[in-house]
Amino acid sequence: MALNCYDMLVLLFLIVNTSFYANVDGQKNGLGASFIFGDSLVDAGNNNYLSTLSKANIAPNGIDFKASGGNPTGRYTNGRTIGDIVGEELGQPNYAVPFLAPNATGKNILSGVNYASGGGGIMNATGRIFVNRIGMDVQIDYFSITRKQIDKLLGESKAKEYIMKKSIFSITVGANDFLNNYLLPVLSIGARISQSPDSFIDDMITHFRAQLTRLYEMDGRKFVIGNVGPIGCIPYQKTINQLKEDECVDLANKLALQYNGRLKDLVAELNDNLPGATFVLANVYDLVSDVIKNYKKYGNKNAGFRTASRACCGNGGQFAGIIPCGPTSSMCSDRYKHVFWDPYHPSEAANLILAKQLLDGDNRYISPVNLRQLRDL
Image (cartoon, rainbow, N blue to C red; front, side, top):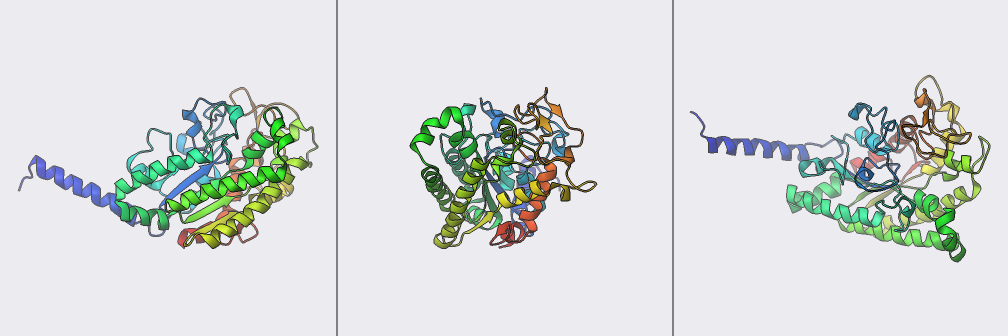
C-alpha cells in the first residue's frame, strides 16, 4: 500500500525520534556527556567568538588535530586537549562542542558542551589583561542555559537522570588567577600590597566553593577538579626570569602548592556535605612535575621527550617563551619530543601522558577514584 505524504512524515518522525532516544539510552558502556569548564588548557574554541587578545585560532595551532585536518580550531595546543582525549577514552561519541559555537544546539549538546575560555579564572578580575574572556561565574551561567535545553530535548525526568548518572563535569581552572591576576606586575601590584597570599587564596576557595555548589544544584554529581600545575616551570616563567633549564620560579610554585592544599580540603568538604556527589581531585601538580623532572623517561615515540623547558612553538629568549605561538613563530620539527607546545601549554604528546594517568592511574595522581571508575559509578 502506498504511503501518503502525511504518513511518510509521521514515519520519518518516529524513526528519527526513536534513534535519538536510543542514542541517549544506548550509551550503556560509554560516557553520555562531558561538561568542560576552565581555561586555555581545555578551551576548544570559545575564544574564537570573543573580541579578545587570547586566541588560538591561528596556525600552526592545531597542526596535529586530525578532526580538523590540521587546521586551527581555537585549541591552545598542536593537537587534542586533555579534555578531548579523556572524552574519547571514556566513550563519549563526539567532542564536547564549544558553547559559543553556532552548532552548540539540538542533540549536539548531548555529547557535552565546553565552556572553557583562554584567560578565564575563578575570580572575575582574572584575565582582564586580555580584554575579554569567560570567567567561571559566567561559564556556569552558560551551563544553566544548556541545562534548560537538555530538559526540552529529553524531558525533565530523563534529563535529570542523564545529567546525574551519565555526565562528568570537568573543571581545570586556577592557574590564571595567579599568572594573570595575582602575579601580574602591572595589574596586581595594588592587590598584592593590600592582600596577602593567604587572603587571596581564601577568596579563590570561597568563590570556587560557591561555583561548584551551583553546578551540584543543577544536578551535577560526577566531578573531576584539576589542581594548579607547577606554573613556575612553564617556558614563559623560565624565560622572563632568565632561569636555567632545570630551575623553576619559586614564588609561583609556592602559591600553587598553597592553593592546592586548600583545594584538597575543599574537595573533601564537598564530598562530605553534598549527598550523592563524587568530587575527584586530579593531582596535576605532582603529575606534571614528574613529567618535567623525568622527561627523558616519558614520551610516545622512540623513547622520551627531548626537552621539558623549551616551547616547540614560540619566540623570544632561550626557551622560546615570550611571544605566543602564531604564524611568524619558530616551530620545532619534532613536536612529539616537546613537553610544551608553546610558552604556556602542553603538547598533545604530554596531554596523552597526563590523560592516561587520570583515566587509569592510582591515588597518587587521581583520587578517590580514577576517571574510568568515576564514569562507571
